[in-house]
Image (cartoon, rainbow, N blue to C red):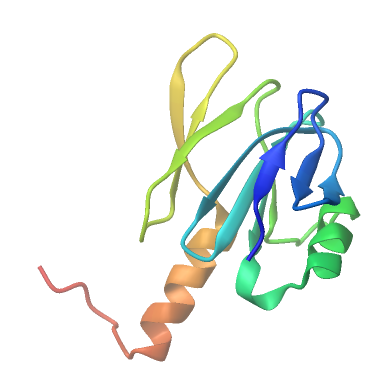
Length: 124
């Protein structure tokens, strides 16, 4: 376990280790670290599958065209919250309005969980 923090110069740290520069906001929810960057992207990384070095590597990569961890967001967007046990991420736009997105990495993780449990139909 590490203490995560964001400096006033937009550097994300885990303990004494810098994970990424250029970070505008971050949130940890369930097993995921979500960050928004000054390059207008939102990254979503599953913490249980990555080491500290793996996090650094993943956050420094540009990601490919089919990278499920990367999503473009509006310039200046910041994470307000991530809804626990769900796929919704609430972002605040520069004008102050709130928007809800469903990050692909969270959606795919939820689908994998349901398929592993053979949960094919929502019980209502």
